[in-house]
Image (cartoon, rainbow, N blue to C red; front, side, top):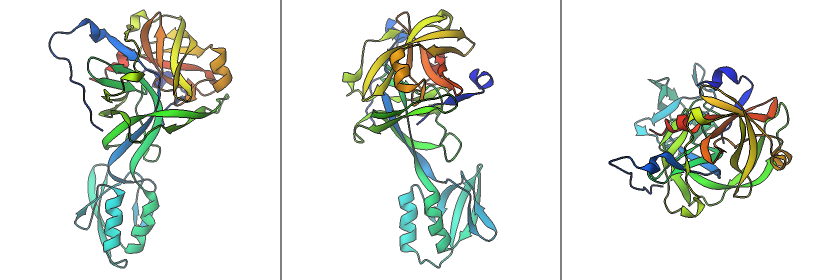
Length: 322
């Protein structure tokens, strides 16, 4: 990706099944229209097993390493922490157990006593969560895109392998302002854990993508034409984002340079700068609009100058959905 070489002092922002029929046949004029969003979202992903989050000594000669996947205990398959706890509850504490562990794609078996099994519990996880901003909804396909970059699990240090996931509307309760050298962030809570906006199908280098929950028509606004990368130009533009409650607002920016995979900008809106000090963690995915067209999505900020950021072309981001 282009920005990985150029934005050396940047930070990437990071944090069921109702389907709308996909359009088929001849392409329509609506294929070039997407609904810009800007809502703050909470993200939940159920991992494809239980993972070890830290290096843990389980015997004198053996360690489990951060990122290890525990696939079985004895002959019992383990898909969640609840499975692991159930095994502990029915086995005698002093009995050694055989753990089947996957590390870097290779399987191995290690013997662990009951006390070591208990010590493992605080270092296990079967879910990852985060926050970000919803970028667009495709009303024709019933799909969405968000974030503009891949989710990297903070404990595992890799994109998490997951079996299911969903996004939820979140409410901004407080802002920790950005200052040069220290990125700020949004403090938010999910409005309703039982009411998802969409499911997560993929966690791609250009964002997260999935199926939109079509019951949420009330948050949709008018679709905009997608701006081609060649049309994006230096000058005035705006972003849609949420910095208070659940209200999406428009704020002014100025695009300062156009590059191969991205464009750079500075925040110029006095209200936003007063509230946030600059770009915040959690703004990733905020739509960028120029001349009434949908140009891209915010993805990065410059840590030493939080008023300055970078955005991904929307056309580039959409390739992650295909």
